[in-house]
Length: 327
Ligand SMILES: Cc1ncc(C[n+]2csc(CCOP(=O)(O)OP(=O)(O)O)c2C)c(N)n1
Ligand SMILES: [Mg+2]
Image (cartoon, rainbow, N blue to C red; front, side):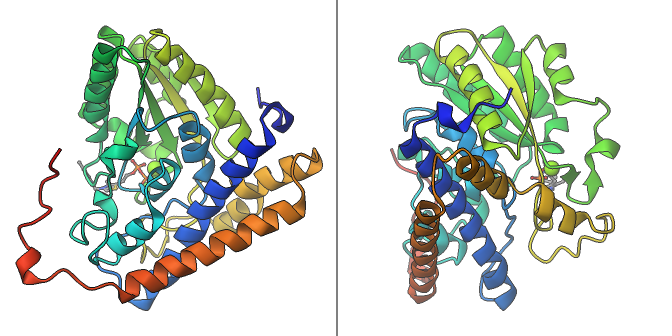
């Protein structure tokens, strides 16, 4: 069911590439900088999973809302959150999305429809149901998306939200980002059903599973379920089968991986490599256009790191400001 790259406008394809490349570069750089030791808190990297965030979120506007996970950088970047403010936030500096007081798992931007990364597994699902209920009442065709991991999809909050969305016929899409692991636990050990689509059926929702390393497959499937939600056709569930290139968190020794697994997924299941092969073999984009984007993105991330490291830390007098968002 993979859509052909020629079916999309070249400007949209280039933009999708830029966003995926920005996420990859952001995450690869965090991997290096985290090891250097001056980044506080926990960081969970989204590298390898970019086709899911970008394939889905490229169908959205700022009026559509998303609720993310602890692995939220990719969702934030795809939703248009400022990369400079994200980097400062992760470094715990003033000028960050939460003025340096939240860190990686609290990045949000309500104006962009990004309701937040979330350190509590399954907590995004009811938030997204609330956003979808508001959208339904407002009647302007907005939708909500809830991203959830394969492990977090076992949480009661997620399963209850599937039921609520179905009985209220909400304009929402639940996206299970199945990267095969919940921390060190294999998805096959922790989830009984073969496909998350079977779970959707149990709650009366249509479901679809896609190769989450294929941007074009994700984009096409997401287009369909998001259009249905906008038109009042109700909720659905999408499973994106994907891989994560790093450990669960930075510092994870990954002893639970099989021999050669990381080399294999880097070589054969890299969504960016697949994307580049698809657009260059069909002649939609040339290597020079892609290289220009790579250079532009590398410069942006470099600047973000330099500015974040140079930004001041919050001081004691800042302690009680920015604790709550004011609207
Ligand atoms: C309610 C709750 N229980 C446990 C945790 C600890 N925890 C953080 S991430 C994680 C695994 C999540 O796996 P998955 O949902 O598959 O997402 P992934 O990390 O693979 O993206 C666990 C158990 C938590 N943050 N919140
Ligand atoms: Mg997982």
